[in-house]
Each structure stands twice: as structure tokens, then as C-alpha cells.
Image (cartoon, rainbow, N blue to C red):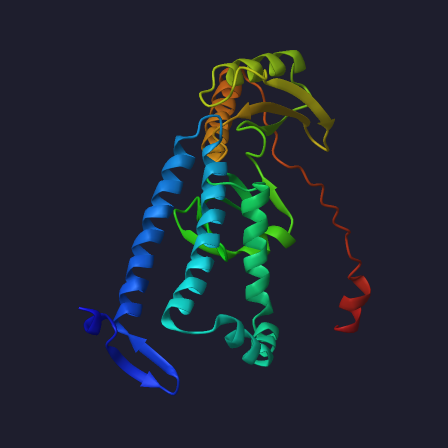
Amino acid sequence: MKQFFDYTLFQIGQFQLKVISILLVILLIIVVKIILWLIKKSINSASGIEVSKKYAVYNLVKYVVIVFSFIAAFQILGFNFTLLLGGAAALLVGIGLGLQNIFSDFISGIILLVESKIKINDIVEVDGLLCRVSDINLRTTMVLSRDDKYIILPNSVLTKNHIINWTYGTLASRFNVSVGVGYTSDIRMVKKLLQEIIDNQNGALKSPAPFIRFEDFGDSYLLFSIYFWSEDVYGVENIKSEIRTKIFEKFNENKIDIPLPQRVLHIEKLNLTGINKNYT
């Protein structure tokens, strides 16, 4: 049996790959998988911690365990990891310069996981695109757009650019729907009808209470806005669409005018008398 374990599969210079080394690496992989499973189970069973933070802690621990496992595997196989890094220092510098953007993404991934400013299931807006965070890895983040398209973003995009996190701190966010009415409209009636619409709208929270604001005097209309809070940030455009439909129907029932844009066109009459004489 000892001869079997010490059997050399192949040899390059002073490096020898033995059966025992292969078996130990396989055993190391199994042990690491068990350790990661136990860590994940213990983190998930912890109470009083948000799911997103559990996810971040587990991923950080997982990456640390994997790095040390790779080092241990190299040692088991007979590689001197310190000498390997020292001998390849110049090469690593060159690779680092060429892959600095990738390294930036890795550092950004660590920042995202540690700070937890952006978490799983958060609704974020990136360059005008509203999407839901579905997965945060060390280099990239997977998001799902409203069109049900998965988009892979480099983590540096989320740490360097201006990002709006609609669900940071609280699930509810404030939205508004605006409408213009004619100058002859009864403004108190308009506010009353708008309040009735939003008070009976599904998806609009009762607390904080929605309210109506007389915004401004337009060129040909009086501008009113409905302000409301909703937890359905991802589907709020559907809620806005329902509100606009109800506004149109309610205003038609109560003879409240929604004016069309008005433009005054001035046409100057040209004097063509002199031009006609030249051609006679």
C-alpha cells in the first residue's frame, strides 16, 4: 500500500507528482466543500441578520477559504508557493498592468460585499436603467431589467458611477403623477377627485399618506401632482398607468378639461406687387 501511495506518476526536474499528492488534494477539496457547507448553514441559521448581509458574509468567507485552499493545494503538490511568486514577480507586474481593470472590479466586489450598500433584491438605477440585483460576485454583479433581461455589470461600474438605490434603508419610495387642467377648472374639485383616486389605488401605501400638490401655472394649464409612496418600486410604472387612466375617466365624468398644448402662429402677408411687375 505504501508503495502505491508513493508511486510517482511523472517527474519534471525535481518536481514529482505522486499518487498520495493527488489523493490529498481530492481530500482537501472534499473538506473545503464540507467546511463551506457548515459555514453557510451556520450563517443562514443566525437570527437578527438580514438575508442580504448573510449572503455578503458567506461570499467573503468563501473567497478567503478558496484562496487558502489553493495555496494549500500547491504546497501538497510540491510547489513552493513563495518561490513561485518570487520567480514570477516581474511577470505578475506585467499581468497586473494589463489587467488593472479586472483587479479594480475585484476590489469593487469586495467593497460591495463589505459595505452592503447594494444588496441582493435591491432595486437600483444605473444610467437610467431600473433593474433588480439578483447576484453579487467578486468581479461582476448580475441584474434583471424590467424587460426580464439579465445584465452583467462589472463591479467597478457600481462603485465609481452615480447609482440610485431605490430600496436603500426602506422598501418604500415616493413617486408622483402630474396632470394639467384648464384655467376655468374648479381647483378644489380637482384636488378632491385626485385624492379620491390615490386613496383607492392598489399599490399606493396609506402611510405615509399620499397628498395632492398644486404645482404651478402653466402656459395653458394648471399643473397638479399626486404624490404617493409604494413598495412596488419595480412595477410602479404599472401603478402610474392605472392612476393616469383613472384620472382621464374621472375628469371626463366631471367635465374637467385637460387642455391640449396651444401655439399661436403669426403669418405676415408678403407684398408681391413689385415682384409681379417685374414679370409682366
